[in-house]
Image 1 (cartoon, rainbow, N blue to C red):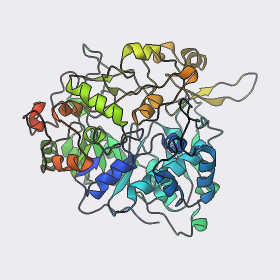
Image 2 (tube, rainbow, N blue to C red; image 1 turned 180 degrees about the vertical axis):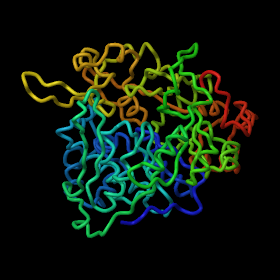
Image 3 (cartoon, helix red, strand yellow; image 1 turned 90 degrees about the horizontal axis):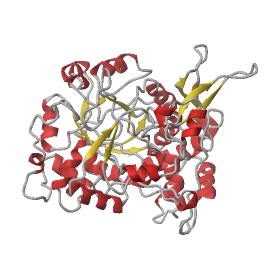
Image 4 (spheres, one colour; image 1 turned 90 degrees about the vertical axis):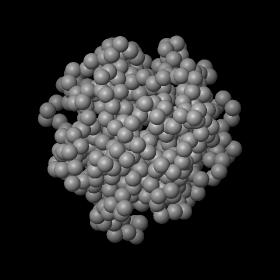
Length: 512
């Protein structure tokens, strides 16, 4: 098994992982060819693969990558099941990937392996730059298949947040050696004498090293996303395998945030209040001796220089890349979002939006599910299911209990019937459908209801109010390196939001 090798010099800029498909292969490839670390999102990769095929794969990229998948039978099955020449008819819904259960993981897992390969292969095509994959630890049933697919395509890094990915280093080790990878599934209410694990054996998919004519796969570098130096110390010493570095995420970052430490307190706008306790101690991080990158509010030349002065290898930036022309965001949504941001649309950290229970940052756009009226009018449905939680159902009449799955965003009566609390359903948004719509793949539900976007960003989104016109990923990189100034209203981008060289450690009074 090959050991992970950190590139030298280390990338100063990591383009953040943004699902579903905002950080797609085109964005990751653009960043990687510019000499920095491009990241593809592995979240929802099975649905993304099938929806691209149902839209006719107009540029042929998906089919080109499928032709290189090491098990042609799996690739052909995806094509036979989902590809539509010329795309869907007007008003035709997407054919869904069947929701997996603990006892029936396929075809979702098979499609996620193939999808992880396709996205990574396309991101790495035609250059020698570095490409990574980002996944959410919280999505336990949807984690290890994209990892195998990405490793089959030669992924260089794996980055994971939204939880404690203690099992993942061993999964990477095992896949590199051609062995099964396994993780523990967190099951709410599971008896103490039970322990449920999810295992993926490459041989079951015709992907064992012998059939591929390989002795091993490259083992990617693993960078957990953490908020606390304590967690970094724990993972460095007690993870199931090697950890090559860390991404330290402040609460100003987009998407899911870690809840504040201690008792949850909300400000006057109903947003979580973060404090200095929620920042990692960088001196402790330096003492670990592993490289780290700062994320959250770091998207500026000053932010990069501050990070380097603190001993970081560089920064991870999401928001600026999300709105560039190379990202996977639906172009109409990108234009409308930038227009509303320039007109004063704000950002809210919603403690209830995500079914995961993690605070979730949402741009307050009038035509999206951030609009309370549109949210109230949407018919609740859970038809993608990535954020479902596993729970234990007690057996009846002497029968053994079993594992069920539920989501706080599904129909209320269904969730309550499964033992969920009514309170947990209040304000919960369907992130799965909303994020699919962000990337231009909205489902058409019964009755013709089209799923609306739900756009997430980091606090740096306010900076874009002063960026005029469209900009590319390479221009974002040049801006961060101090080599390009965005066209604006005459105010330097770093000054527009009152940033200074110490912008990475903002006042924590109230919402960040």
